[in-house]
Image 1: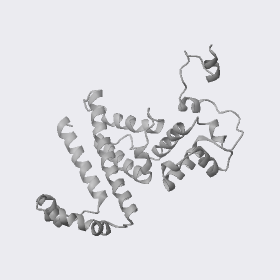
Image 2: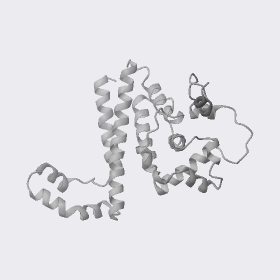
Image 3: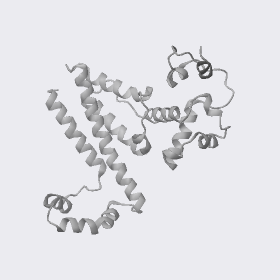
Length: 246
């Protein structure tokens, strides 16, 4: 073994052990009151109230009331901490009952995922590589609901990814709007439209956007984001049902 390998504590032929494999091993006798769930809950609380950039190992230690190095007994650094956080919030998702049909299951997963992402908007921007255990429970439940419909594995994944893309795209737009409103000090859709009125008035005055202008004058659900989400989701599910004849 080379000096560098000795320093790293592993030989070149040894595979790295994931966070989840380590945590699944029997826990040693506790020396502190910390555990992965408490660490994740504290970090999620920081991210929800202060933003994901505020989550540091030192800030976490302060929130937990422990020594700065205490959390390193469970996570190697911020990357693994983010994995714990994402797994924690996905663990909040109520999964559809096993008896639910494919459409009911996909509809339920979409709505609950939206609620979770709106409650933890930082999660839409957090990439953790391989899925965490609670993340993986979502496609597991979706595949179980799609089984028996005569779809091959690739098609089932395409269906899941289509619904997932709609959810993340729609929620991402909602979160962007909320960030804009918060930054400008607007508390309602009416205030936002008033604030944007000078620019929109000029744009509509050019005569280049007659269809959009008609929408502005006739739409009755501009601020009903839940209705918009559900209607778009039904369109996606209707399209899948028609395309797959299911």
